[in-house]
Length: 414
Image (cartoon, rainbow, N blue to C red):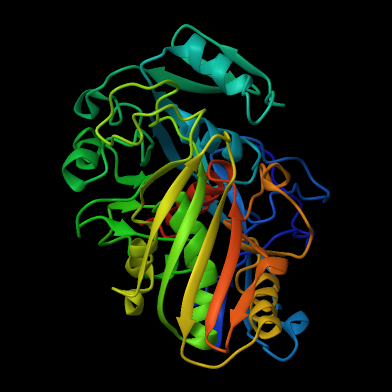
């Protein structure tokens, strides 16, 4: 197996993993900017090991350019991953992962009722993402992605899945069905060691983590079933964190104008939510969302201070959050935007993006960040009522965070 040259020190993106606020060891990962290393040496490919770039540094708030020192490469074994549910998020996850040759994850299996031929076709050809640039082929009971074999199984009962036989470490639970410990726990009974749910988890025994906000509270000895929250919570939480730390949030409400999803009806048909029973392609559909309240799961001091709703609209992808909140400390538009810009260039780089361009939703398709601040739309009324608008790719950007969280879990593997 071949590894990246140890003389290479080029890193395009970074993720900061602080253990305290002053001086700490940082895992500086390549998974935030989604670019290839332009370095010497052979590509890592799909070997059972990956190299993780580590920096030990002292945070220099006055001069961030002096932050990093003592850079080095360390070896880390890959963990074996299975995807349960090969729908929108399952396929987006695999695409995101496949663009990271140095990922600490190794996807070895997919469980889906469609079979290998359909799974390969839908992975290769996508109406939103376009044609996948990787070579994708279907076998009898597997798919091949650039020659990498991924086993395809088909069973609706997680207890019957061959996770033990396949030595699966982590299951990406992407069906949207098994979102509590009872359901997701069936993967553990089938032989997996951890489960990552790609939806809001239910129950206090499912840990919720949002990258850039509270991933440091992940404890591998305690958290065996975790949730990556929702796409909207992943958009909200990073900029809410900035607002709260800089100005103090008293209370707030948000509206997400959200693209339609597979849970809605193409034409009018029965649904448990009468509004979502109406045609997604023909209507603006008001519905509920727990995204704002879920922020309190990752920023506990905001419990009971946030709420919101969703408007589902006839677009297939990219959504936008409109947040209005009262703050404790007096402020003005430029100060609010300055806080976002600083965070996007510092601790939330790769998670939060700052944009002052006059763009529309399709311009944000396949954006890697969780949240893109539309700075021109920021408003401050009086000196304590703040309005923030942030875009997000509710599929691709979210799936990048699922990969990130999986890699974070891998870095803590015991």
